Image (tube, rainbow, N blue to C red):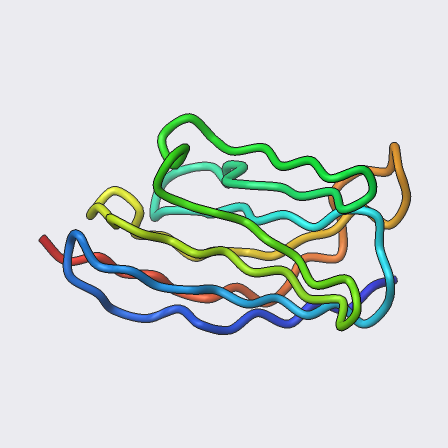
Length: 116
């Protein structure tokens, strides 16, 4: 079971930026970010596979958020720009251990709050 640790959440004004970091305890195939707002289901935000290089984004964050990864240190980053109040949620890091496996090994979550 992979262990994941997130950091980087906080409070920011609308239009601002935050960078989330997630470090995995071992090498894994893919890393991703989900988020869950109060009263809503957890939703996919972004994912990345390094070999071959591939990223995917939820439509509402496309063009504002960028996911990247440093495989040397088993770390993924989510750069969030032009944040909106509707981006407010707890953000969770997750992983796919091998190709074809489900998202698993959820981190503890980090709160992102965007004020209007």
